[in-house]
Image (cartoon, rainbow, N blue to C red; front, side, top):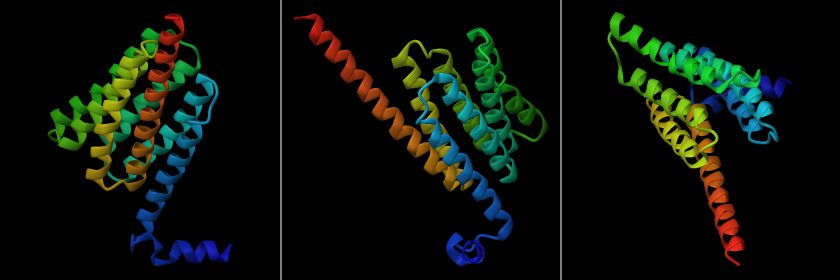
Amino acid sequence: MLELIALWESDWWGGLPPDHRWVVGIGIAAFAIQFLSYQGRTGTRILAYLSIAGILWVVHFGLLGHWVSGVVLGVSVVRNVIAVLGARLIWVGLVGSLAVVPIVVEALTVGGSLISFLAMMGGLCGTVGAVLHRQTTLARAGLAMSSVVWLVHHAMIGSWPGVLNTLTMIGSNAIGWWRHRQHRELVANSVGR
């Protein structure tokens, strides 16, 4: 235990102030839980893990001072919880579209920013991917666009756990896309025989 405390107080964190170490720690925990979601076998379990990770991401971005990003991710958490509870897909789409509200509020009160715009676009592309889940190619395209936008967002605000998480999601999405394509080709070849 003393070794963990010494590591926490060491310069391993790259000289981050102690307050920022907690922010990074929360991001690492969110990444770990989200990574566990990739191991889920059912959609409900995956969405449950993503919801828990999403709550931690909301806290992470809020503590970094990017409340709009946190609120957009909070809307995604609500969308996931609704989907876990088995609500009809139209409600998932409606809740997902609420991601625009914090951006409009910020634009009217303190002036919009590129960071907020990226958060909004990442949230909207992710919602499109979630709503179109039965149309696999379109869903993956929406999720891929969402991942690229969030990657730029995370890099701009200095959230390296967010960058690591998004790179992992992009890799997972690419593997899934490739496997889906291989399966389609296999089915097409077996039907043609």
